[in-house]
Length: 121
Image 1: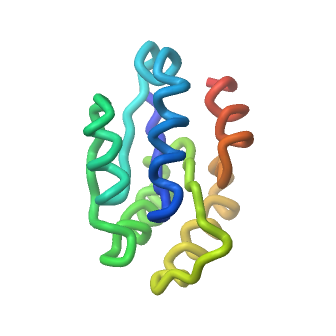
Image 2 (image 1 turned 180 degrees about the vertical axis):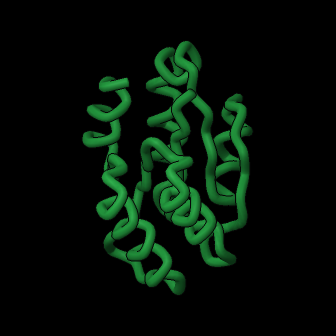
Image 3 (image 1 turned 45 degrees about the vertical axis):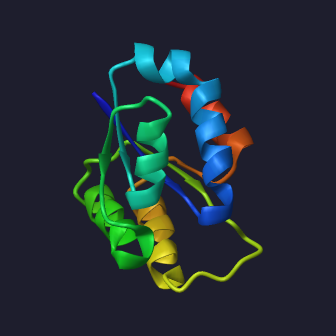
C-alpha cells in the first residue's frame, strides 16, 4: 500500500480537490491510502475520498505528517502551498519539506508536478 499525504494552504484547497477529482481513476484503482491535515482532509472527504485526517496544519498537522515521513510511513507528499501568503506555521512547513529531501520522499508543491508523480504510480 502506498501512503500519500495531502496538504493545501487555504487558498489552494479548491485546487487540491480539483486535482484529486481529476485523478480519481488513479487514486481509487490503486492500493493507495490518503492522509491529510485537518481542513484539507475534510474537503477531501466531502469530495468522496476515504482519508485519515490529522490535526490542522497550524495546530500540528504538518508536524504529524513530517513525523510519519521520518518514520518511513509516507511514500509521497502533495502539498499545494500558497507562496504569496504568509503562514504562522511556516517553520513546520519547512521542516516537512526538509524531511522529504532527507528521506528521499517525492514532494509536489503544484498540480503539474503532482500529476507527474501520480502518473508514476
